Image 1 (tube, rainbow, N blue to C red):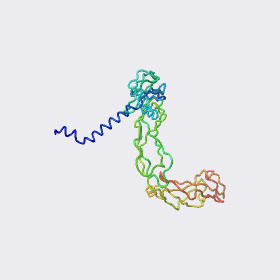
Image 2: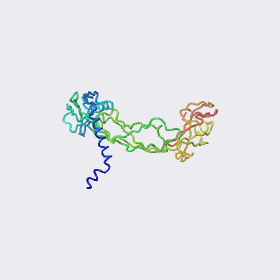
Image 3: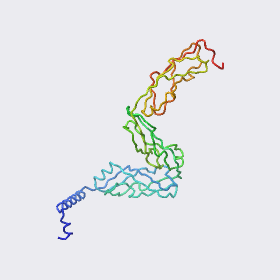
Image 4: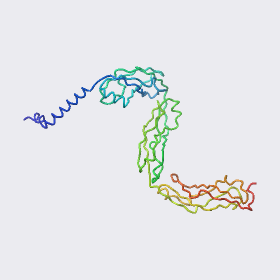
Length: 323
């Protein structure tokens, strides 16, 4: 037996079964009903690659009606999934152009056996204006809060920080940033990186690059650290030692990531009363006022067991300095 014949008869049962299955599938496809149907409301998307120009408005009309022919099942699937008609503009000849639509611009999907019989209307009008290119910051947005057991251990990182935008002059010049799709903090379960798409809603006709940005998140277990004996300062232009604060020291509770709390120096933490809250106090007068705390690093929050103190002006105090 020759090598060629030996190769042909090797696993001949399996090869015969495969051939039979192929014939059966071909027969099923050929027997599937074929017809022509109309699919309406297909969006027209203009893609301008001429870097000197940009579409100044959506095409008119924005949608077209397609007449498709092919297997009924494929037409139904396409109608449900939706499609678009992409108009490539490689070179702009005038500010206002009537572009005749081509059937191969319809996105039918890879391997589709559908055919575009006709389109209505057969042309769209596109307006152009000179384009500009700018580099603008990428803005990160978050929604919700981290799970209660977690806290940020460092600011959320973003790479890259800027995006290149190209489009109509007036629209691009008005941009001060490009937004990322919001990062849902409640879904964070640990440190890592997340790829987020830029939010181009409302930026029709403006091309943004890159299309995504990488967000880096570092979290730790949320913990607490209590600082006691923090002196409360109260001054408002009165005579020296004329104001007394009760209590004179307070306790503050820092909440956040362990590594951030560990580096806080109690000597850098100060509590004080806004002088505006102590204006025009009469001798002997008492006021219950809130105090503020400073010296807390970013990403660390405060939990104050007591948020107010009582400030009293001495009964035999001299008039305020400068009066």
